[in-house]
Length: 547
DNA sequence: AAGCTATAG
DNA sequence: ATTTCTATAGCTT
Image (cartoon, rainbow, N blue to C red; front, side, top):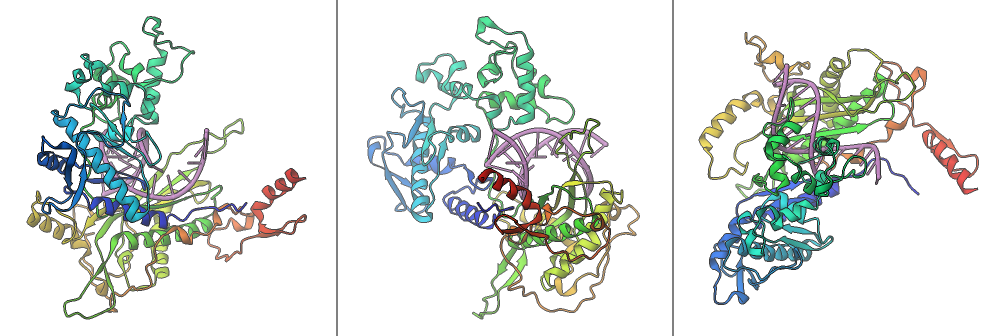
């Protein structure tokens, strides 16, 4: 068995983006929201409603779904009297084709089927889809019929409970659907909230007469249990979940989720991420020399990621000249963040309390990070020496005494450059440009006119009232063009060496040693295999077991 | 703006 | 089943 530490997410990320773009190309509204690498929400209300208007009531069986508002020939034929794919519930009374929402769901199911087919045909990927009237329900119903299936949640509308023979809205199909789920499975109710809700429900006296038997006999709490708990509602949930630090109106929000209600919008396509961060975890990280090395690696990865995610080819084909591909930044992050997760000291009894708490500090992103002509190692070294090390010392004033289980660096506060940021109709573009001019002033220095190196400074310093710390730098460096061909590679994880598992000897735990240490390798006495020293213990256990 | 928590894949 | 590496949103200071 080959055990690989670390992973190469570059190709996964690329595939994710390609499929996302493909799906986004089908929407009219641009409302396509990515959730992680392999999920996406699509708001297709406009397409569905347009096609609902196109339906011929007298000939629903041979309907045509138009994918292009302008071109009536682009689309597919379908039967508008049936739902495509699976339904939830499986069995149901005849569909009410006179009901607008019912028709929306029918149309949505056929669009989903078409998209799945196209995705498979053109991109070679299969997927599972959930179709419903909001993000919450579509995500939950999308968990059914995996893999390669699609499920439409029927009667996902509150005022039509009677349609399915349920006069009591408290037992509409949506409620029945929600009731089955564990409280913690509801999207938006995570570990902390479900814990609080469970604690509350389970510590109350058991209600035998309602079939709610708690207090040792039952440990899982379903949506049904919560929803039917005496006095349960937005107010009680506010009491259970509210308090300092928690989201305001959390009670109402949670109550909505429990009842299958979710009015949050599907976000519009995002051209640039709001944050890029790189982190690595460590078994033992106690020496400044190691930190230096890790910061260099993380910084290298971060800059590469900034190049792949924030750089765009600019085609200068005015005269048809095939000049080398130039690149420009489509967004500038304002803030650089360094955060760590210190390993807590041992308890009195020798055990270790595990915490995942992080501490962080941030500062302004230095100009030279956007340089496209300097070799990357130069930029990395400058970043580490002039910015990250000072930040690290701020975060860990103790020269030693820390052991970090994680280090993270990232850039946030993206300011998109003008022209191409997918601005919709509803925005005041003139105002936007003015505002961007304002915000971008600090970066007006161009690459050929790069600001001299500056020491790392706290952001707060630069917004002082007296204005004396205001940046007003003059560029000094000569121009050398912006060509970076070759300097941009994709993926960031592909360069991460496996230094984190090395343990340090006493004299390695020095401060500014420039040790170019080789990985310590050992040869197995039994089979002769060569491996890093840290792997030997596990390897010996392998022989023990094999004998 | 900065630091942190919660949630998610 | 658990841990790692990202990402986003929202609160407090």
